[in-house]
Image 1 (cartoon, rainbow, N blue to C red):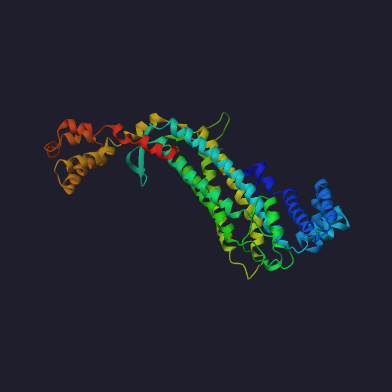
Image 2: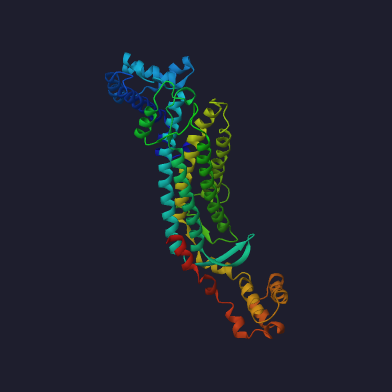
Length: 433
């Protein structure tokens, strides 16, 4: 995790202090249920809770023990025994390290999901506000980067809203899939611990009992989770790339907010660069990259190995922290985005009316001209605009073959810009309800 691209609340989920507190809760809940089953003394379970709740786990001490034991869970349990005393021998009865590690990891991913969902809600709200603000702000639509037909900037924001709404639904599903608990002991057979302990711990930790585990929770769940984060990151990159293209000097239809005192270049004082959306493009690449090792973690050896462990210690914090930061940054970009309708109109007029070529083509076919001939008539006039800078309407009105089929009034009517946005309200109703 890089502080530059981190927000404190998400970072805290992955801190050693938070991790060890979750480990303690898992162990203490399991011990309490074992006491209910008569496996351990109730007094011991109560003492574990009492002393553990009052304690501040000494991270340096745990690290010191781990340097000797070369085992993180044993190091924690040894430190816990120093806090609790002899009754600590009843902790971890019938459990294996993965019961603690996997359940904790999923608790952290659930907590991270909740922060990410909150971040997506803020982004969705920002996109909806800008969509409604610019619902009828006409701009040129582009295909292959080339002027196509008119759209509205509000539609661009509505498209992004719909995309992130889908992403939110996927994250809700991924959160549910990852919210499982395994307290099944070595190789997952419950040979040394009753399944009711797993069900109890799951309930207390806000999880569901894993239907069948080996010595670990199946990693297909985690693969889907991180893949979902990667898709959301890709959506962030799509919007960021759109803004970057629209901010190019030759286009300049929108622009990232440039604050007082901000500098764009160490060499060129005039520069106002799209640094935030460029940054988002890079962050999206990183989040997306984390999905590959998560998928590779699915194929563990037999009932368990730890090839996934080092991967998850990195991608768990890095993917969630980075995506959390990116969602917040994109929200800020959208909220403060400078939109230039006058420049949009100037760009619309740049090709001398060619954006209406399809309407003229359709009118000719509806008037009885074959599609091939209609296409030829429209294209030959359009090429004069491309190559000689002519005005499309003027050229059409001067073309005897065109005017022989379409009267001047009908040709002029095909240049009505409002025609292209007549169904915007319908699209908005579909998106926003």
